[in-house]
Each structure stands twice: as structure tokens, then as C-alpha cells.
Image 1 (tube, rainbow, N blue to C red):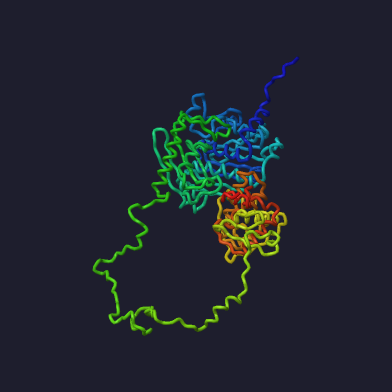
Image 2: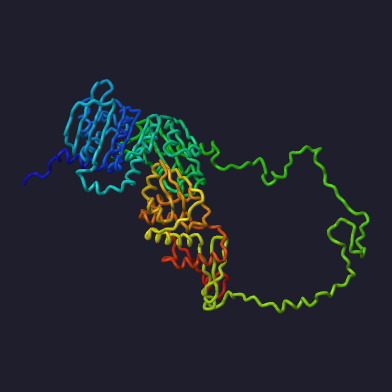
Length: 612
């Protein structure tokens, strides 16, 4: 029997490695951006076409490469950052494995132009499926320019698993933002299909956050800074008032490398304890500087996971530093124990000599036993006459009440058949629940969840029919979103219009809302807030529940526009709400699966009163 174990060809091995390193276009963007940072570039341009499926191009002004280095960088395990095993415990660079370029070249058509600053001429190399198709000298500017075309062209199964262009573009923006946040001293730009999405000048961290997420973030940021013998911590946290219902604005960097760490995330969340509800997530951009020998970054192919030698101490430092910033900048509500606020409005600032005591007027001639009804005193009431007889005038009006019709009252034990023939009367309890009498006892309905169910099923019909009616706004509202949310909104625009929104694109990262669904005409929420909550709710539904786009939109809009607990309803409004609820396909359960209706039987009431 012949031997069956053999070495894989390099092309096959590179394609297998590419499956871990390059999972989607955003993975290639991350690797190329980090290579440009390691090359010392202070100007990096990223050009994307067709969400990275057609083209990913990086242009930087870094150190460039020689002819030999340009060819060697596409070999597996070829790197300039690690020379011996001990170097793994002193890593300061972003990359170190030497797998990224080989993996990318194995599954795409790659062209690279590079030149060192001291050289007069550069090198151009073309590679297709790990095979070098061309190498020649070329005139190019100092630095490196890499173009990746037709990603996964030779692995169609992987290409078929890619998501839609808006989804893939959002992943690219995520990776771009992480690298840009970590290096505010570097100029970055991002173009997608000829449209400039980001133009980030050099600056400090706060300026970079504002440029990435919008000018309104300037007032939301609170600085955090702590220096210890274990770590140095710096960065910004967001004020609790601006926390969002979805994750996505939480950034940890260890030695300028973006990481995902639930343990440290819990440290920050616990610092916001009692300031935020459980389903809200604050903004934070925090940088940890630590001795590389005390961490291990070689844990996962994406290099977003790190192991620490002293994890508990880092947790404690992180939590205390964030809590101190919250207290120092008066984010938490405070009480002034030196002043009793209940009497603050009664304190006067006049001088003692300016205070005039009240005067008392009385009539010295007043006789309480006088019979004369007219009095010269200034009192409002006349003295009583105990000897006067009652007047017999209009005595017949006492019997008019017997001729008035008797108002019929519904008995609490009235038969159900009698109730069905009359207009049902509902009672609102604490402006939260609607209570109605039924034959077996009482029916209690949660008004907010009932309205959510009604709107949810109505919006689903609009999405199917594409005929949601719109109510035009008197003054159109302009909404500016961050780049990620704007890409998401663009992908949902047709469905959002089906719900009844009249919305259109209006420049860079901006939308104009000219109308809202007719179903929300009575809502007190403004268009800008409603639209932002719609996007946030959609992201939350997709992240937590993995729902379809259609369900997520309907659920989000229903939850954000339903009447809230504490809203007072009239009898007609309660009648309409109950009628529409029982016309729903699923009237008994809310959008989130919780019961809308609860019944309390007479037997249960009797038991409460210890009867029988």
C-alpha cells in the first residue's frame, strides 16, 4: 500500500490559510491598513468599489520596499517584524505573522507598486491566485500602493457567502474607524464608488472622534486618564444621557491595537451602574498602554483577543478610573445637603429694615347681635340672624327630582349577554392598564403592548403592499447620521418608504424627512428622534434576535411610536384600542412575546377575600 500523507501545494495551503485571515473584504482592508501604519505612513487613502468585491486600493506614503522585499512580502511567513521567538513577547507592531499578503494574493488579483524614499524608481508586481504574472520597474511616488481586484475570484463558494453591498460596506467602515481612532496623528480618507465618505485630518483623539461620528459628539465626551505601575489608561467616555440601545460605539485599544474583551467591557458597564438602564450601552474610546511582555496577542488569527498576566488588577483600575471621571465631571446627579430645597423659595434677600409687617383692620362699631342685614364692616359675610324663619319660597322645586329619569347603572355581576348588547365601558388604571368587566371576572390589558401589537401588524401589511400612507411635515427635518448608520439607512430606504416615511438622501451622511406614516400622526415624537430610534431599534433587533429585515423594521417602528405607559386615554380611545387589538392575528401576545391580556376570575377574587 502506497503512502497517503503528502505536503499540500503552496497555492492550496495559502487558500486554506486565507479562510481564517481573510473572511470578507473588511478583513483585507484591516490587514492593508495595519501594514501601512507599520510602514510609518502619515497619509493613507482607501478606495473601495462595489463594497470591496471589485476593488480595494490602499495608497500610503510609508517607507516603501526594495525589489527583493516587494517579492518576498507575498511569501507565507515572510515578515519584517519578528526575527526570533522572543520577539513575540515584545510586539509593538500591528502585524507579525507574515500571512496576510500571501493569503490575499491566493484569492484575488493583486497589483502592488512600491518605492523607497531613497530610490529613484520603484517596483510593480502583479499576482493572480498566488502566481506572479508580472514584475517590472515602474515610476511611482514614495510609499506603497496596493490594488486588490475580484476578491475570492477563484473560490466562488466563499464569494457566494458574502452579504449585500451595504452590509459589507458597513464592515469595512467598522475596520476603517478602528484603525483611524487608534492613530489620530495620521491623515485618512475613504472613498466608495467615487463618493468621499471620510476625510480625516491629523489631530488629537477628541478631534478624531468628532470627525468620525459627527459634530454633536463634541458635547458628549468626558476624558478619562489614569497612570499606574501596571497600565496607563486614557481616552473618553460618553455621558449617560447619550447612551444607545445597541452596541457599536465601544472601543478598547491595547498598545494601539483594537481588541474585543467582554471582561473589560463589564468593568466599564459596572462603573455606569445605576446611571443607565440594563439595555443601554455608553460610548467609550479607551486606550491601555501596557508592557508587551505582560500580554499575549498571538491568540486568534484576527488578533482581536489578548491574554493578560494580571487581569483582575486591570479590571479594578479600569472601573475606578471611569467612576472617578463620572464623579469629577459631575455626570452623576448630585444632592446639595447644605440647603433644604423645600424652603428655598421662601427665603428673601431684602434688608430687615425694608420688611413691612402686615396691618390688621377692624370695625370698632361692629355688633354681632344686630338684626340689620346690611353692615358697614368690610367683612365678606353678614352676621347670622338666629331668629329669622326659613323662607317658604320655591318649595315646590323640592319635588322636581322625582320627575327626573333614573340613570341606569351596570351591575358588576350583570350577565355577559346583557353586556354584549351595550357599549362596553372601560376603566384606565394608573394610566397604564385598561380594565374591563367580563362574565368570569376582570380583564386587564397593557395599553402600551397592545398598541405595539396593533402597529406591528399594520406595518407588516404596509411592507407587503408597499402602500404605506405618508403625512407630510410642515417643516422637513434634516438628519445627519454617522457613516455606518447612513449606509444602513440607504440599504433600508425602500422599505422605510413603504412604511409611510417620505425620506430622501441629501448630501454626505444626511437625509431629509418630509413626511411620517399616517399611523403616527398623533405621536408627540419629532421626526428626527423617531427616525434615529427606528435605525437603533432595527440594529438591536438584528443583533439580539437575528430577525429578518422586514420584521426588524416593523418591530422597531412599532416599539418607538406606540403610546407609552402613563398616557391618559379617553373612553372612545380605549374602545378603539381594544377593538383594533382583538382584530389582530395575535392579540394575546406582544411583539416581544409577553402577554398583553391578563384575566382575574371571580374565584381568584373570592380567594383573595378569603371567601368560600
